Image 1 (spheres, rainbow, N blue to C red):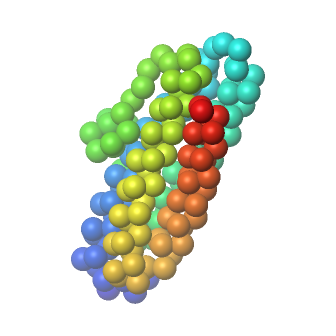
Image 2: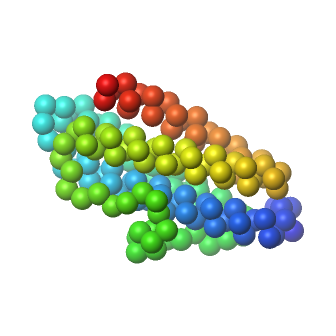
Length: 154
């Protein structure tokens, strides 16, 4: 058992999945910062603010995921070179078109939701209510973002 009473071997599997998720969040964070900085066009004012909201939310979640990894007895991955190796969300450079940027964020959120549902299964198997609660909250928020971004792009 680890220090919070969860099976050590199961925790290792969960820590690995959370580190991959941490990499995904970090890549989405940097992509969104780039969209915020480089956005142009008639939706500039609206999207510039929206992208800032997204990356501010992501930076808080990144910290929470890293802290959960530490709570489980692991070490959070913390280098972009490592993130680029393990993330399913790829680096996107020099996007200034709002529709392209929004579509990228939408696709990234869909990736996160899929991965987080798999993490819920791992956490449920080991009765890890802490991880389950945290990830469930993220899924609920991101599902709403997906709905709103799809409506905006329609």
